[in-house]
Length: 290
Length: 269
Image 1 (cartoon, rainbow over the protein chains, first blue to last red):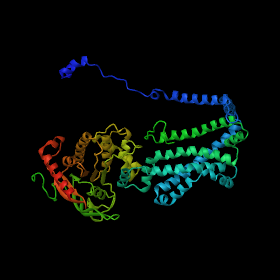
Image 2: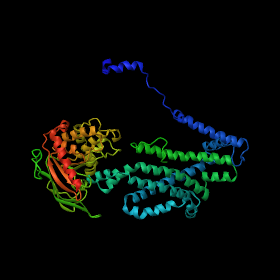
Image 3: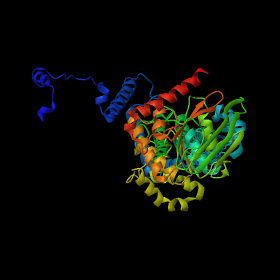
Image 4: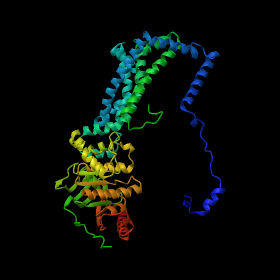
């Protein structure tokens, strides 16, 4: 094997020359696992919180101590697990979110196909959608209450109203995602408009459609809670409002925390569905498109 | 020089005419640009024809007309004795990008034209044929692989199969390998030659590479811009099958040089 190095000088000099091995600098954070970095931030956050409250820098009405909040979280958690009144309220909010999201998907997807697929939709309907989208949609809450009453319907309507637009935009953008070659290929295959839509444009646009769904999933939660704040009812938002009016700040904190779990679950559900359906589209870790 | 190239536009010694274009012109109404002027072209059964020319010479317009994607302003376009008035199943087409759909496996992509034209059951029935084609292009074993996992060359082989599945009378190739690296491109060109011979295919290639055109073609259509027109049809008399070694022969060099001169003339105008 040694005769492979045909250059005689190289074998000689290799013995005397030192390897050029050097240490490449690695940023410290690159060598730290994610969970340690996240725990670090959490500890700093709680520590600062504790410091600020324990030394009386902030009034306890404005900011409870971490311990008080934790105790209240256990109380609320117990109530939820044992099927107390809070579970009933949470279930109402969850129903609002589910109905609102389903409605937003149905309307958003249909409008998205209309503006993304038809020239009429793009020319005549899209400008109105953009105009409505720029309005502060929360301001419509009193109208929904007036039209639909103080029950669950007005909250569903506001939740759906907020979540519809990102789904419209995602669907419309998705339908434009297919490249020129794919369109030409479908033309050469003599595909009908319906075939082109179903077999090419919609599947090509799924990543964008799911991005719209994720933004919608966040919005639908905000819509339901805002609806409850402004329109009463018996949901979780009402519990938060009441706790806040009683200056029960630890309760507000723990309720928000449990509520955020619902939002997170919905978001993760959409993400999970996306990974199953759009299996070919590798998503970057810690995706920023949500 | 002239012994190698009969500088004439009349018939090459191949089979019967398959695709015929007579006085085909295209003027785009939008800006009144004359993209093509009076193009006459005959593709004979089993022949390989390339079209070469600088950008704006009307190559892609010509290809779109031949694919039935856009109508000509004037002239006759006839494939297998039937006028071309839209996309047809006897026209196969291949693009610079493989354009495979990532949610379908390789073999599902290949039978897609059948699925679109004849429905899902027909596509299922065509699976056996797709297997055969995949074996021909050297993709055996990759039937159920998704396009993400295919290399650029393998993806283009898959799209060759998709083009062949409908048994088209003419293959329209729009710079099919220009996105590949040079080594893969040479290899794919030889593959293409082999497949065309085996299938006795009539092929029409749009390319930017003179070498590619010469190594593959029986006839090379040299086009000139403003307005896009055929300036000359060059016959390539190199023996078949062609090999990559031929690219170093003086005959090959002469033809390449000749076409280059023709193209440069066009640029001066």
